[in-house]
Picture 1 (tube, helix red, strand yellow):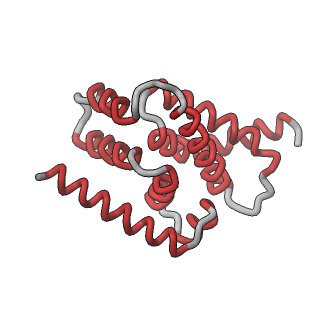
Picture 2 (picture 1 turned 60 degrees about the vertical axis):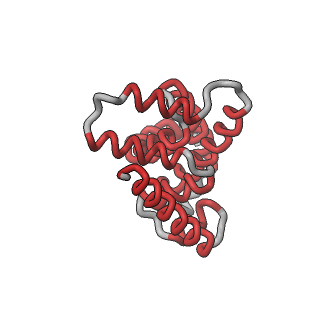
Length: 168
């Protein structure tokens, strides 16, 4: 594959599926600076992965897999740094978005909750929100379909509980 072909594929994938990357970035990084860093890291990993893409899955599925793997590695590396905790970063983000509308508040709340999940649960949640089926999620994450079902059920219960706490 030539660099020109790789660039063309990368640009096409990014144009068509950048929403996938933004969702993952927002669920794994909480400050503007961290989100920029993670997006760049994911973009580099997607770029480097293009020659390995054999077309056995959809490009969006491939990008999800690469992006989720890159995000979980990035989170592990970030934990080694003595910077702010995720909750402090979320609070800064929420404080900076106080003028946001009701819809933005709900979305911010949802990403806050997703960000507090374990990395595998975050991945399941994001894929679930994007409409992937149990089988597809299981294949993407390398877990069983029954494990996906259990995780989805627990995540939904957790979010419902948190939502009720918020309204009380």
